[in-house]
Length: 249
Length: 249
Image (cartoon, rainbow over all chains, first blue to last red; front, side, top):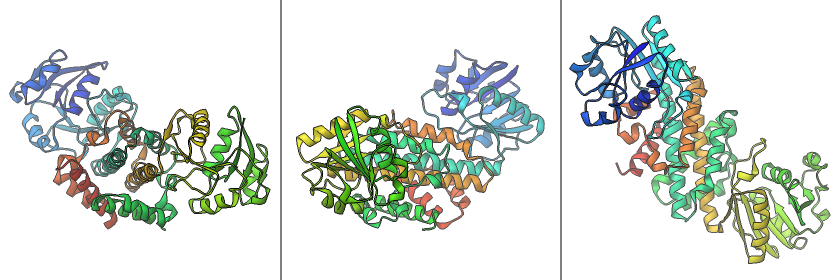
């Protein structure tokens, strides 16, 4: 039985509570959030506390709080837990605990329940035994477990900004254009799904199509005229040029 | 029985041949490509020709050639066919034929076979009877049929550039970052799928997350340092600013 204390009940923390409370050979010993009212929903699952001084030792503390709160938090609980793992994509392996690890679920968590089995878990530890503990835990809840160093994880997090946040901004801009012209955004759903599905089998660079790749200057000029703000025009021009540069046109 | 002549056998044309050759109450009377060798694959399906003068009358000519070839082509066949529809997203309704229509499949076609049933078909015609003919045909091969005016279609095509080409460029940049750092791009697949799936239920603007939205300047500065070219840095900055402007931050 692996005893785990979960620190933080935001998007990541609450998903971890949910999945770990149903995982064999795992026991959630305590759930912490500094704001007492945010613990209400978790009281039926495990003992909760909003006081660091109330925390009791367990095999592992899993930390899912904001990036800038992680280092001070680890320092304040280092003497309580033999092993401490944080769940941040952008922070390095912390060295304040006895045994230190990273347990980074690379997924965009919303309120909605997610199939954790398909969430890539990127793990790292400062010694072999801790790595094995974390790896065993990770493999119990996901089929996608990757050993990723701190240096790699920085780049992975950066790549995720392009693949998720910037992609979503492209969707938002497409949606805005549709709404402004009484077009049902649903018309674009199949195209969006197909574009996302294609990368599973085709390198993105090979999957590219469209006016920029075709060097169809007339269409690009027409599109620029249709866009309503200087920022939209700038994005259109810059990304079209980037497509052409990527393809050495 | 609707008799159709298909003009052009590129990505769109060949998909139309494939689906229409299996559609009830539809007969492909001829398949045209100006390059004879490109017709080989279609000889078993219907009579083929690379000569405009060989074209025989049919109820409908479906034109799937490059945008700049469409207008001259329609002029040259206007006397042969009572109804002529083009399949371009960016061109307006042409007026050279007796009855004119647009039959625009909004999907990114690659070599791979696609489930045409899920492809949105955006249709338009210059009179009611022609519209009905085109709509009946469209509904035979797809469950997603939309009436879209020329003016709306221009914007739809523009929105598709954001939702498909620019999104794919984001994937390409993420993939490049992964490759440069020995990271399996597969780690990002679930995130990409989730981001694309989420837009079916959540407006893109509400689904946004990440350092730009959080105004996490430290992370953004770190990311900018990790990017290797001025163009990548420019894209990162511009899109981060666009996210913040979209959310009025």
